[in-house]
Length: 106
Image (cartoon, rainbow, N blue to C red; front, side, top):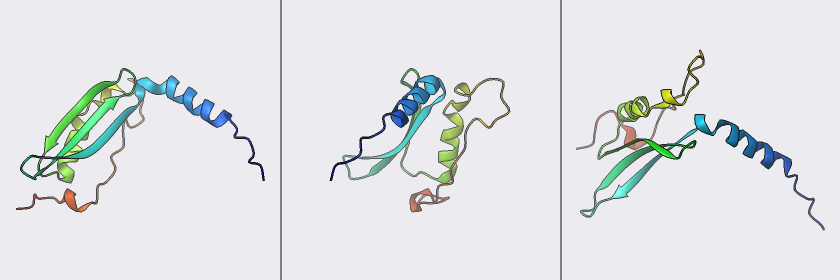
C-alpha cells in the first residue's frame, strides 16, 4: 500500500509565521546542571529568536514558584511585545512540580 504524499503547505505556513513574528518570539528553558560535589543547580534561560540574543539567565539551588515568577518578570518580555497594545504581554503557567515548593528543602 502506498503512502499518500505529504502536503507541504502546512510546513510553509508555519515557516512563514515564524519568519514574520521572530522578533516577538522568545524561548524559555528550565534545566538542571549537576555539580562536581553531586549537587544540582537549576537554570532558567530565555533567548530571543529574532537576534538569538540571551534575554535572561539565572541559577539557583532551591527553585520555588515565586523564584520562577520573578525570573519571568525580569526576563525582558516587555521588550518583545508591541508597544501600543492592550493585549497581555505574556502568560505565566502555574508550576505544580515537587521542586516548586514554597520553601526550600532543608
